[in-house]
Amino acid sequence: MISTILVIICTAINIYALLCTAAIVMTWFPGAKFTKFGKILSSITDPYLKIFSKNGKLVFGNLDFSSVLALAILWLASSILGRIISTGTISLGGILGAIISMFWSICSTFLFIFAVLIFVRWIVLLINHGETAYDSVWNRLDSMLQKTVYKIAGTFSKNTLSYQKALLISWITLAVILVFGSIMINILASICNRLPI
Image (cartoon, rainbow, N blue to C red):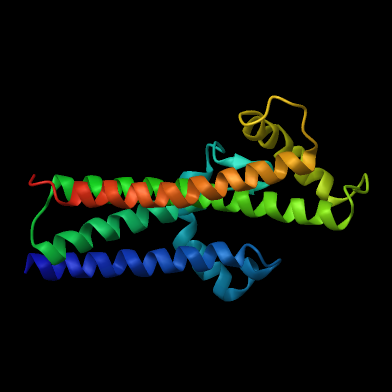
């Protein structure tokens, strides 16, 4: 009886996460939220999604990552319930492993998006031989990236670096962090999952 209720709750959370994902994707298309389907979807998902976007602490430049946190919490709840359903027990180690995995999932999503932006910017600079028009979208991206890129690159080189080299060093650093971070988090989550409590 309890496992049936947990399966229903877990399924409902997964469906709601899919609806939230659809609502987030609809915001990428101008006017999509104002269609009949968009309004219905917004009325279902906006109360939950707005909880995370209220404080604005997850907004970096023009990018709002609050929806990533909102989805991660739904996936965490689904993961914990799924583990309880499959094992038939509530394990502190399993919950801790799921929390660690969710935290890394959020962090790695941010790092991946940042790494992609850095890589794309580096390629564009390479193609344009380091030149950028003053009023281009690339200048706005540069204003968002430069400070962090130079901080990352500065940890590996005390010399003054060109922006292109700083981008490349930062991209390589983030790629290494993503690969080794995933390996370490998987090991740590596996250890937590094996805890007897």
